[in-house]
Image (cartoon, rainbow, N blue to C red; front, side, top):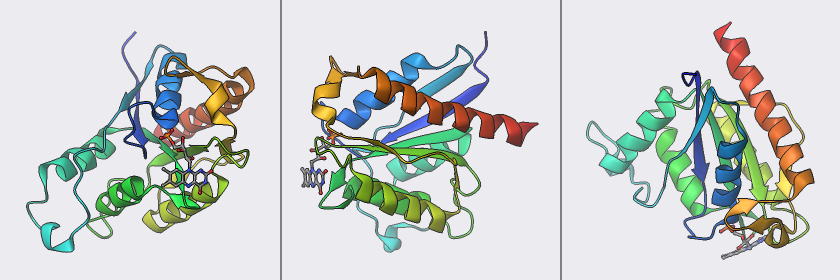
Length: 185
Ligand SMILES: Cc1cc2nc3c(=O)[nH]c(=O)nc-3n(C[C@H](O)[C@H](O)[C@H](O)COP(=O)(O)O)c2cc1C
């Protein structure tokens, strides 16, 4: 069956063994056959600089903005670093937010999650991430905050293996897909 819905996955962690990237890979494997999730790496995205944000922004920025533009929905995972979202993700979102009023993320359905070895699951970063997405006017899924606590024991071989966490997460993904469906109806 042809892919009908494209989800873009963004991980706010550059770490090779990132729990957030592992969660994104897990979602990709659990999606219905007509839905695909592509992870877009943020390694090459330079620090935001308004001087570079003109007619010819850096290639990695153009690629990121286009990936968001072509996606039907976006799934974002951020680590909590010192009670905030990762700088890598905030930086990427700042680039994506421009040009002002023409962001490829504005009006786009988005689902977010955080994960942490702490029992708090990165909830403070989650809150901050939602606030930034409000500023960009992305359409956030109405669902309980997806925070995965004590994540270290829930990842195995680069995948999320905790059944309860997977069920909760996939409930949010289903809501994300419903939002996409409602918008194209
Ligand atoms: C600089 C730094 C700051 C961190 N601050 C927090 C924090 O405030 N709260 C928290 O729950 N975990 C914190 N952690 C732990 C991260 O949640 C943990 O490293 C997590 O696994 C990162 O996500 P990743 O596995 O996708 O790389 C911090 C880690 C680093 C490296």
